[in-house]
Image (cartoon, rainbow, N blue to C red):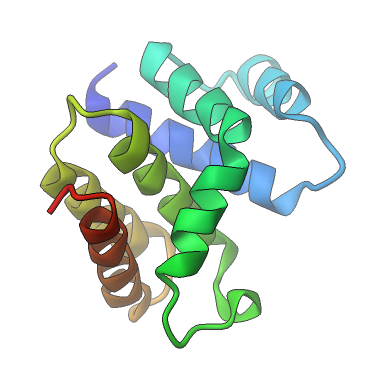
Length: 134
């Protein structure tokens, strides 16, 4: 599977994780891959499980970049996108920051409302800047 498809599948898993607080990461992953036959590869597994292993640091990084936004007002789609791209920015140095940000914007255009992509763009640019990846 190509990276774009893998990134989309990782987003789907993170979206499900953001909307199912009573299931573990393993349960979400198992259901998605066995019941719905969601295709995965090392990238998908690394991002999905890597988020859960580093959730506190990722959430703190995102929270710090939400200037003027209340967390409750952010859609589940945008939260999942921010988690995915922030994971990439923090832990995947082989992916250029610009690629992580642009792919986050594309996911927002596809899976969220018309204004979400500019919000995602602003937050991810602040995240990248704070991480010294800009």
